[in-house]
Image 1 (cartoon, rainbow, N blue to C red):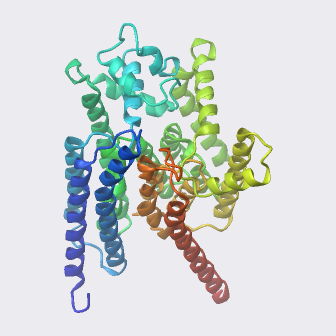
Image 2 (cartoon, rainbow, N blue to C red):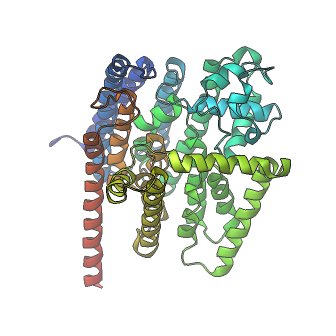
Image 3 (cartoon, rainbow, N blue to C red):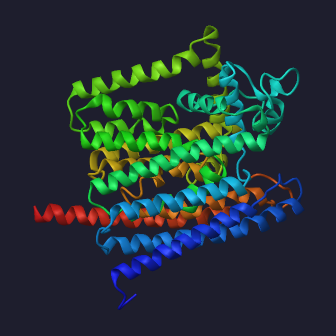
Amino acid sequence: MPGVSPKTRLGLVLAWAAVSLAAVTASLGMLDLAPAGTAADARANLSALWPFWITSACGWASLTALWWVLRSAPRAADTRRAAAVVLGVAALARVAVLVTHQPALSDDVYRYVFDGRNLASGVNPYMVTPQERLTGVAAWPGEQEIAARTNNPQLHTIYLPTTLWAFGATGLVIPESWSSPAASARVFRGGLILIELAAIALSLAVLTGTDRSPWWAALYAWHPLALTEIAGSGHQESLGIILLVAAVALGTRAPARIWRWTVPLALSSLVKPVALPIAAFVLKGQGWRAWAGSALTGAVVCAAIAAPLWLTGDGEPLQNLFATGQRFRLKWAHFGSVYEPLLWATEQLRPAWTNDQQEILARRICIAMLAAVFVALWLRGPASVWARARCLLLAMVLLSPAAHPWYLLWALALVPLAPGPATWVASLTLPWGYAAWSHVASDGRVEWGVPAWLMYAAYLPVYGALAVSLLLDVGSRNRSDHAA
């Protein structure tokens, strides 16, 4: 925009981003999907998804423009006002989605309700399955209706103790009049929205504390993916994210105060273990006492949180958790950028192997590649802990057999604090995996999957952005070494 002042340019881009966010909110309010039992169902789902994809792309484009403007824009003059606008607009959009939208892209929230209300009523979630509660006397109002909507009803819960305690606390506040699946899910989504808004506020505090513009926080706060996956579908990620951001913020400010950042990081790891390796980035350069102190503190915190749920009933809760984990470990796969090609190659090279053997080998290769990424980040990664954490969290998604869009939220939440092009591009393309709701195979069968061309369309831009970033980083390092 030649001839336009930086302040005006920023204002125009912010207006575009706010209008786009409103459009995404409206598209979610209209989004309704049904299990695709027939080709007609699949076509109807595809028609319902297009407005969501289009408005999401517009929102992503507007935030990309905001990123570009912020690269050269001065720090906001009124940081409090800017922070209030970022948080206020984010809150309004989330409340609108909470009121107008029922979970359509994912039904995970009903398992959250089932687990949380069981824990609130004194039942260990690791000791009961939804299938067992479909008949008989309900332990709490609405239990059978929730159990009927829960995915994988034959399995015990896969969720970890920090998550379950949060679910249990939420289950305590649901009155009998709100016991329907829709009302209960709305309460859980509302609780996760409040946690997410607190995480955004924490990111704003980190930005202002490092003399950066609060508008950077809008890259996550106004992002269609964040709005969709937490306000819309009610995923647990906001709980892990706020603990992770708190841990890295405390660890980068005072890494020697081990317990201050280890406690939230340990709690975050008991939401999802993806947070655990980030401790190594905070501890880098410190002595063995710091490493031992962090390990001990983390172990004590994890034991205190997990023991009441895991160490009862002669170890049956842990056995049930391991059994569920084993089931998902072997069969949980969707839209994996590396896993799917590896599995195809293994099937061609070792056709005599069983499907389980082929899948195990593909998963082991992905794990080995992830370990290599961790070592590379440890040895030659970015100087910032925020950037190393974001890179590792992105690698976990790219190398996972299942790359659901909400998995990316952990890395996306760190983009305002450590921008990364590959993570940003992935935040546009990963939701294309929702095309599985409308997939019809070449032989006319309706199945859960995506065509191969969509995998290329989704991931080639991500790996292209990653390659460019790596080349620029190598060039920058070479120039630095030459200058030294």
